[in-house]
Length: 625
Image 1: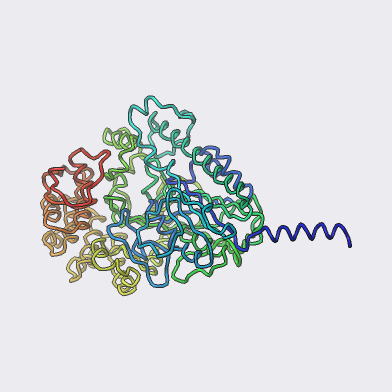
Image 2 (image 1 turned 90 degrees about the vertical axis):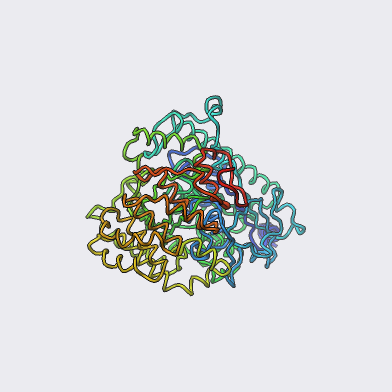
């Protein structure tokens, strides 16, 4: 017998015996960091040699996106493979957990059914009811190493908070005394930041954190290699959404949505991937796709109830990856701060639709403003010391914005009013509207309605109300047209028997501003509407235009309601008028009597007693924290 043949046969037999039947998958997740902080993705970032080593043996996805710029919404999107506004999981923090629809479970449970050992270390933060049987273990000590059968395939997810927003909640004393490894003088600040020593220091300190994450990635890879399973394991490294300096986490810009993604391809399962090691791919992939991709790699059919599609594995070709050129983003509530925004990116063009554009990005959010850089930015704005690109964060914005990211990667040059881009604007407006109608997008209903009527079965609620959601979107879109075209339908909508139509008509009027002044007399009776949200929207429209003092209406809505979400929505308007209305409408904490849950954040702010404090779980006297 040919000795060379025998030798090759024995090597092949050894490889077959060693290789697992199904690949393992490990997710290494760093919290709150966009792609902008890693040199692998951006010149302004820092070197991350361990993550770069993953890329050498795998694929760097240069256009990977969270669908939401905040933890619980993003993580629920990852776990379900579904768009949050379709399944009722779009609010952070959730006021009530959403039940998943029939036929949908968190994706690790499908892996367990075929013999995978599933572990999570350890953050969950879901906005939905967790499927039974999702994890074999979820804890701070959970590891693939604990699986009883060492031959069983595993899925392991580990989250690391060293890059979390809270890591930048340092004190003035820490700022003065703690040195950074990265030189603050050498960082490249985006143009929307003021160039101050504090911003430079904060940026440098965060780059230090990213290098800590890189060390953690190296440690996890070393453990897999030590266990002899590295070449059986797909390793995904990514950020759980963007962040974390101001205008990152919690905001719908690329700094909040565009995440780093590197996937190491194991030697024993290269046949599942049509990409060469070290490749860079510009196909668009979003968080809705991550779970379906893991299922596809494991040989599991993707449930039809999921919205995402696999981007690796069998039946995924390079040609199909190249065709993926769009992503859909959403933002609704972040703790106590509301503003409904949707985005559509196609290639290098980004369309942003704000449904409450009179709310500035910089509206008070207690957790955000714990960061010294946030507070300095606001102080400089109030002192009139910012340039035009830096002021936008604290001012009302257009209802729709359009950016060419190829020339304006930081989204500071809005092209929506440019006549040469009107065809593109209308096209992207239409495609976003089509997307929202197709879901259908539950956020056309205010959160209190969803809280009361939808959370037991959000998907069924959306299907039942599909036609109404479309009508509400039509009403909201009246703000996009000149008042000469929208005045008559708005007047009719203000008189509608449907309170949700009345509320959106008032929101459109508020967005149109002074040009809608002829509708003020029609709107004034709605200050006494039977629906509290209509009253809030009437106060916004009329108060922002100086027709009424909104304080009486807003105080009454908060004090007369025993609904935690109604209070939260009304207090969002309170924050607007307290800080940003352009007219002096200050509020006092003692204006309010009983509050519940998240709403306490607003009262703590009015008391100037909010830094470091969290709202209590139960209602309390507001003047007596």
